[in-house]
Image (tube, helix red, strand yellow):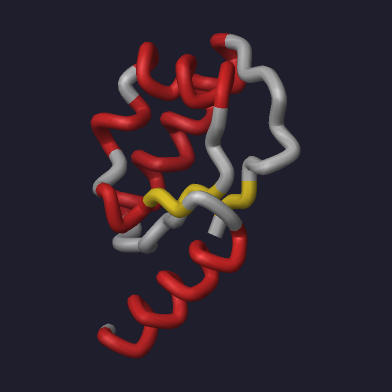
Length: 77
């Protein structure tokens, strides 16, 4: 669970790092959940293709929702 609530700005290097993290998690079959992505970071995530790599189940509005989803994924798996 990656909580980005306090993140207010993402530049291209940060976007590349997030993309690399998502791809690594996918390759290693790790279920990544991203929480609190809003405003400029959300815009950057959409422009760099990050949002296309994440399913709706991998996005949460806040940490509580993200942790709840992680527990459900763990219980189902």
